[in-house]
Image: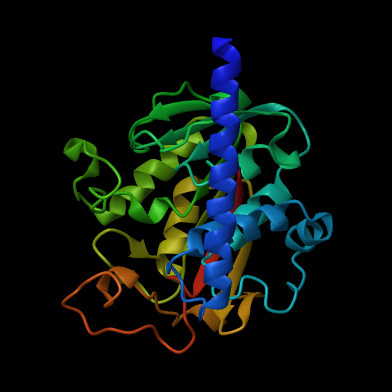
Length: 299
């Protein structure tokens, strides 16, 4: 009886959450679809779930083809980075590391691309949701000094995380010894650690904001010099690079030259986050980065 009551409560809670989710998505779609406004997170997650369950889209990401018109309209780079990584993962079992916890969504962890993987997530602090029932392991620590053995993982994904290494991460963790700002150049230490824990022939999929170099305190946007510094630090046996650019009508495949002057719009400095600010969204409504670099580095 107790078990049945608990199950009913859980079911009712899930139904209530789904209704609220749908209501927030509907509210967002009726608005000007400004990034990070009410309903944005729910809509982005729904959009992401649809994207990663679309085999034709996965093939486009894998082959480096042109994305559908208006793909990711007014959405941030997660709708590029996550499908790109999943499309390139080999269809094999093995130990897989999400370095940064960008993949910690049920729809992602249940995706076909991760079905055979033994997934571990390393991040600075506990997540609001943990998917233990899916067999996911969670480890909390510093990417500059990982707890894992040498040559443990077959593949590693590091999605929009490396740009935060050595920066002010107090918004993400309470442990000031890890979260306090140190040296922006320490991302190299993390790259070398990620290589250390990769098996021979293993692959690192790493993504980050790209364009004109910018230091925002809590992260830095990489330019071509930092991209090459990262690649040199890893010293891959083989590599693949894809640059995607945000446009007013969505995202498309691009290149370094076209994106070299892209600027990041930091919503934290706008009037939508800072009551003392008068900064409005630019006309193209970026959610943040206007370009993202996606690297596949084989050990």
